[in-house]
Image 1: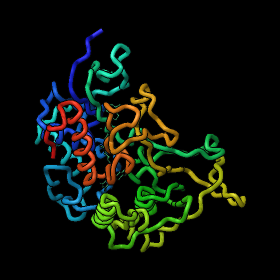
Image 2 (image 1 turned 180 degrees about the vertical axis):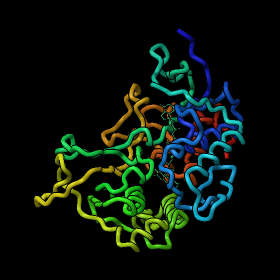
Image 3 (image 1 turned 90 degrees about the horizontal axis):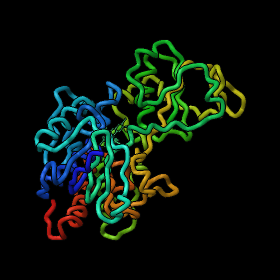
Length: 368
Ligand code: FAD
């Protein structure tokens, strides 16, 4: 068996969350390679942004979509940047800071060493094992699309796919497509599919549309004000969810203006031919497109036995409560406000690195 490679910190995942973490590890003076390494299953930079559907655009301008240290450059075309621009930015970010990212390395598990349960965590991958004093998991959610279960789902004779596998409207031309989900993904895919297909939009609750002038900038301001209020010990002024869910990006506005942005209540079951509502009404369908979100991709952490009843790992800040050598960055607000956004993850990453560095080098190490 090949011996483990010793390193201070292993970061798992080189999407925006892993790169922001690596930025602060570099700034704290850790040596690339022997001090910290970033392992990423993807063969190319960009994290989830390299897999999203071609028409996806950010809902904020570049300066509101930037990682620590370097503002996202302006996009070439008018409007908010497309996903390809984010991939380009993350690619250049990796290079700019010479971050020690090993692409094409999938971590299978993180475990405690039997003979040294309080020393290092062992990170097993298809390129060998690392023995780390701290691990930052930043594997995102893209690898775990969520599809709810409905009776009859297995009988449906048409095509079912999750939005993670959607690659554009062309293949759905002329087909009857049921889009399931009440969030931004569903609204945006409905907007483009309704131009070429016969669409039905089914949601659990009536969709909540944001005012036309609210985009990612306004959401960021609300999230920042909330964080400041909570940090100051004041009452919770409410987060962005209280404003609504769906950002009225131009294609969604256009769908509304065409009269296509209309939702119906969720069906109760599927049949071979389509969907059926609780009152017995039915509708034929060729495709069911599940825009039903993602779950944190945490399977590699299973050996640590940390998952609570929520399915998440309970954290204090970013540190796993049951394993102080493990931090989680990204995933959702439970690891820090805005941790799953480009602009918000920097703060979470900085806090995680502060704790990690204090742990491995002593509290005097500067970060920030
Ligand atoms: P990812 O980008 O998913 O990166 C995780 C990385 O970990 C991947 O590279 C993956 O290969 C790697 N990995 C996973 N498992 C392993 C393993 N076992 N071993 C090694 N590597 C592994 N945010 C915004 O700020 N603005 C927006 O406009 C916006 N729009 C969005 C639109 C959509 C449709 C979605 C889904 C999200 C959007 N977000 C937006 C939210 C967020 O920015 C993205 O989800 C972002 O990709 C999260 O980054 P991450 O680094 O946490 O995860």
